[in-house]
Image (cartoon, rainbow, N blue to C red; front, side, top):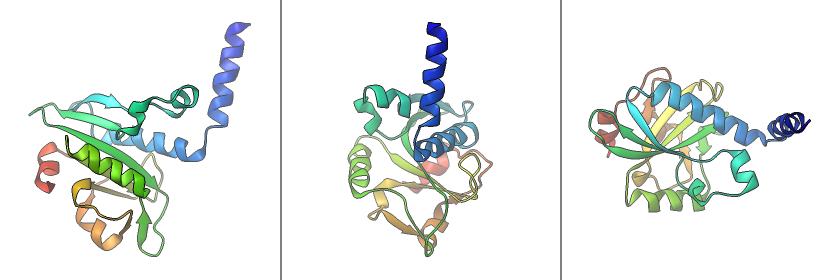
Length: 166
């Protein structure tokens, strides 16, 4: 009977999980599978999911979503995953001011890159932009700026490409 109750609770918590968290978790999984795969990157850290933080918030969840280490040259960097369903007037609000400030603080110790998926689905976005947070001053970004950071949605990004952006 206890097992049945645990199953029911798990299903219930998945059903009531906010849509933004469902989309975010799907986009994070896409990034790990296609863009930063296991054969190129070791996963040193991953932020806790909604259900873990719902019970007892883990302070590390304030860090960017992933901490990767390149298999080839051991370069470490953070990735913050952001998915938005569409552009609005050729722009996208990718974060809040306090989040940008926090990412810039973390960037003092290790590079932080933002992986922004727009359109399509979080499992396979229409557009993928990856950019270093150190050059970003605003929470709203226009397509014209993002275009220089666009990557193919179905190919891994090598660490040398990331480092060239720094």
